[in-house]
Length: 219
Image 1 (cartoon, rainbow, N blue to C red):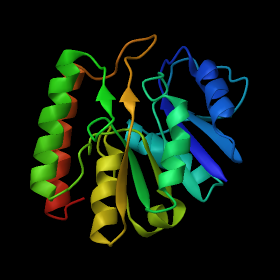
Image 2 (image 1 turned 180 degrees about the horizontal axis):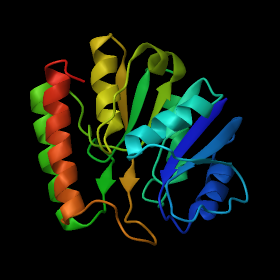
Image 3 (image 1 turned 90 degrees about the vertical axis):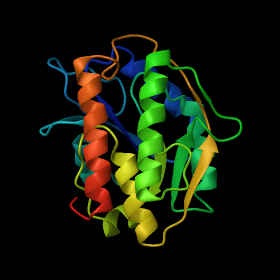
Image 4 (image 1 turned 180 degrees about the vertical axis):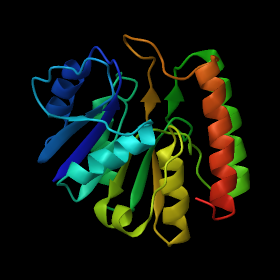
């Protein structure tokens, strides 16, 4: 089974997204929405988990506690990650242990706002240099991971970029990391959680701290 985990907070199109997931994913799957909204969404399909912790990374961990699948997919809840790419991630997972939906390999594209592109560029270049990652999109929030990998690594999330932690810790254990191209879209509705706002600046600083702590085994 495939467990698709979607951390959300005030995402108005979550039901439409789940419909699209069900349309594109032909394998047996479940959709788990881990929600931190003030008013929880009324899901027509999928399973709703009210997040008890804070942060996207911790939302993912809470979702995995309820997941039944031997493969876990993480994606955003705002349509920036097109559900049609899930099949591509799963296909590549037959040859790897962790697969990242990448904006920066051949065939990928980033249609996000310009200021967010700058934030992503600085963050991923810094993380790749410090951690020695040969990954083009270490800042991706879209990926598929085999359950056995999650069971072997101890995750201690800081902020949004839990896939960075998964990539680094998986690589240290000798797991194969792969990337497949995706086109990252602008969110359809709602407000972005990270940008050139105070929250965005704080997130960049968290990425820097996370990178250093991972490098020196502090997290």
